[in-house]
Length: 322
Image (tube, rainbow, N blue to C red; front, top):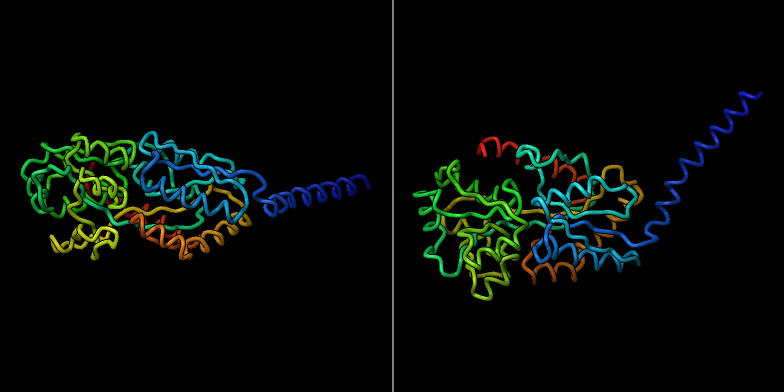
């Protein structure tokens, strides 16, 4: 009888423990939520994260507070997301991080996160100083090909990130010796663009939206946007295809994730809220006004996309031997 009694107690305890997460999920969120942004203030990742935070607060009635952690080319912030407790109170905006492992920066994988939703894709842009002698993209590419060591090219964040991968792919197709390039890592696109405006860089690849304020101020010029269509917010920036006949629909993506192990109930709530936000006219209008592209992918679609990107980026880095 004693053994039977112990089995009943154990079964009851297991039942109670298994019910706790469900209760927690049903109450979530009952306090403020942190959104970790692995980039500095002012860039595209920060801007879109703050747009999300405002709308998520309206959806859930709790503050969604932005914490910028752009150190180490975003490694610090992305590691912080992965290492957070999977309780729904620490989330993060994520972008291409597949290069960290092959470049020896961090051992991170898609499996370290819980996908929630992708909300953005932006084609890469190719930017130079307003006083640059290069008046067109082919002029810039020919000059860099003639002397790859003579020019400083910003990576924005890490040199295997979305923007440098896009421009390196272009350089490779143009026949530029990638081994000789001077690629400079930094603290994100916003900081790199400021360096460009100050004359400290020759080329900065980033989204055109991120460069928009400095383009409008006449401090930098956009020579091209990757992709087949000009952006409605920046009609004077020609496309890569117009200028070179090269088709490279490459750029940056952003999405919302949690750490691995985020309960299904919480991720489902967030996915539903994100779908409502991203499909709303208000969101699409503000994204268009700021020059950001809208891209929706659900939990399962976003996870599959990230896994595909992880494979492709690591293969590209092997080919480039950087």
